[in-house]
Amino acid sequence: MAKITKDHAEKAAKKLSATIIPGAKHDIAKIFYENKLIAQFGIRRGSKKDLPHDYVPEQLHLTKSQFMEFVLCRISQSDWIALLIQKGIVETMLKSSDPDEKTPHRRKKPGRPDS
View 1 (cartoon, rainbow, N blue to C red):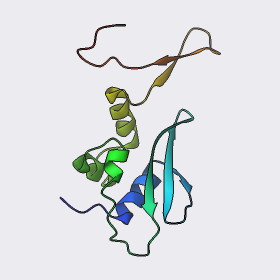
View 2 (cartoon, rainbow, N blue to C red):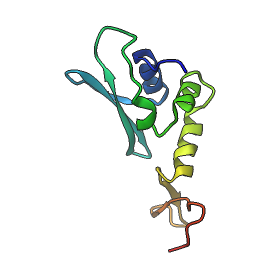
View 3 (cartoon, one colour):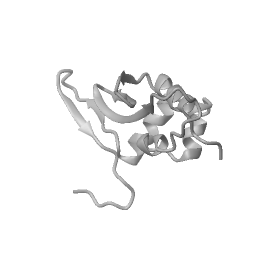
Protein backbone atom coordinates (compact mmCIF):
# COMPACT_ATOMS: atom_id res chain seq x y z
CA MET A 1 0.00 0.00 0.00
CA ALA A 2 1.26 3.46 -0.89
CA LYS A 3 2.33 5.80 1.89
CA ILE A 4 -0.25 8.49 2.68
CA THR A 5 1.43 11.87 2.23
CA LYS A 6 0.72 15.55 2.68
CA ASP A 7 -0.40 15.70 -0.98
CA HIS A 8 -3.02 13.01 -0.29
CA ALA A 9 -4.26 14.87 2.80
CA GLU A 10 -4.49 18.14 0.86
CA LYS A 11 -6.39 16.45 -1.99
CA ALA A 12 -8.84 14.93 0.49
CA ALA A 13 -9.36 18.31 2.18
CA LYS A 14 -10.03 19.97 -1.16
CA LYS A 15 -12.39 17.21 -2.33
CA LEU A 16 -14.33 17.45 0.95
CA SER A 17 -14.52 21.26 0.74
CA ALA A 18 -12.89 21.37 4.16
CA THR A 19 -12.50 24.57 6.12
CA ILE A 20 -8.78 24.95 6.81
CA ILE A 21 -7.78 26.40 10.18
CA PRO A 22 -4.09 27.40 10.23
CA GLY A 23 -2.00 26.15 13.13
CA ALA A 24 1.63 26.29 14.23
CA LYS A 25 2.65 22.77 13.20
CA HIS A 26 -0.54 21.51 11.54
CA ASP A 27 -3.37 23.07 9.61
CA ILE A 28 -6.69 21.56 10.68
CA ALA A 29 -9.11 20.50 7.94
CA LYS A 30 -12.68 20.59 9.28
CA ILE A 31 -15.46 18.92 7.30
CA PHE A 32 -19.07 19.95 7.83
CA TYR A 33 -22.30 18.26 6.74
CA GLU A 34 -25.64 19.98 7.25
CA ASN A 35 -23.78 22.66 9.26
CA LYS A 36 -22.37 20.11 11.71
CA LEU A 37 -18.72 19.15 12.13
CA ILE A 38 -18.46 15.49 11.12
CA ALA A 39 -14.70 15.02 10.78
CA GLN A 40 -11.40 16.80 11.04
CA PHE A 41 -7.75 16.00 10.49
CA GLY A 42 -4.39 17.69 10.67
CA ILE A 43 -2.21 18.52 7.67
CA ARG A 44 1.44 18.92 8.64
CA ARG A 45 2.89 22.27 7.67
CA GLY A 46 6.42 21.04 6.91
CA SER A 47 7.78 21.74 3.44
CA LYS A 48 8.42 18.05 2.72
CA LYS A 49 5.58 16.70 0.60
CA ASP A 50 6.39 13.12 1.61
CA LEU A 51 5.70 13.64 5.32
CA PRO A 52 3.57 10.71 6.48
CA HIS A 53 -0.12 11.37 7.13
CA ASP A 54 -1.13 7.79 7.97
CA TYR A 55 -3.60 9.00 10.63
CA VAL A 56 -5.91 10.76 8.12
CA PRO A 57 -7.98 7.73 6.94
CA GLU A 58 -8.97 6.82 10.50
CA GLN A 59 -9.99 10.40 11.22
CA LEU A 60 -12.21 10.29 8.09
CA HIS A 61 -13.64 6.92 9.24
CA LEU A 62 -12.09 5.10 6.27
CA THR A 63 -9.66 2.26 5.81
CA LYS A 64 -6.36 3.13 4.14
CA SER A 65 -7.52 1.48 0.91
CA GLN A 66 -10.85 3.38 0.98
CA PHE A 67 -8.96 6.62 1.58
CA MET A 68 -6.71 6.00 -1.42
CA GLU A 69 -9.80 5.19 -3.53
CA PHE A 70 -11.31 8.46 -2.34
CA VAL A 71 -8.22 10.51 -3.17
CA LEU A 72 -8.00 8.83 -6.59
CA CYS A 73 -11.65 9.82 -7.25
CA ARG A 74 -13.00 6.27 -7.23
CA ILE A 75 -15.15 7.15 -4.21
CA SER A 76 -17.08 10.44 -4.35
CA GLN A 77 -17.82 12.86 -1.55
CA SER A 78 -21.48 11.74 -1.60
CA ASP A 79 -20.33 8.09 -1.38
CA TRP A 80 -18.24 9.04 1.67
CA ILE A 81 -21.22 10.75 3.32
CA ALA A 82 -23.40 7.71 2.58
CA LEU A 83 -20.77 5.48 4.18
CA LEU A 84 -20.73 7.64 7.33
CA ILE A 85 -24.53 7.54 7.48
CA GLN A 86 -24.46 3.76 7.05
CA LYS A 87 -21.91 3.46 9.90
CA GLY A 88 -24.14 5.64 12.10
CA ILE A 89 -21.47 8.34 12.38
CA VAL A 90 -23.56 11.01 10.65
CA GLU A 91 -27.18 11.77 11.30
CA THR A 92 -29.31 13.09 8.48
CA MET A 93 -32.00 15.65 9.03
CA LEU A 94 -35.27 14.49 7.48
CA LYS A 95 -37.93 17.11 6.89
CA SER A 96 -41.33 16.31 8.34
CA SER A 97 -44.63 17.59 6.94
CA ASP A 98 -43.93 20.88 8.75
CA PRO A 99 -41.17 22.59 6.71
CA ASP A 100 -39.86 24.37 9.83
CA GLU A 101 -39.50 21.15 11.85
CA LYS A 102 -36.47 18.91 11.42
CA THR A 103 -36.20 15.48 12.94
CA PRO A 104 -32.82 13.81 13.41
CA HIS A 105 -32.70 10.37 11.90
CA ARG A 106 -30.01 7.82 12.53
CA ARG A 107 -29.89 4.61 10.56
CA LYS A 108 -30.46 1.55 12.67
CA LYS A 109 -27.42 -0.67 13.08
CA PRO A 110 -28.01 -4.31 12.09
CA GLY A 111 -28.72 -6.61 14.99
CA ARG A 112 -29.75 -3.84 17.35
CA PRO A 113 -33.28 -3.94 18.80
CA ASP A 114 -35.47 -0.86 18.55
CA SER A 115 -35.32 1.29 21.65
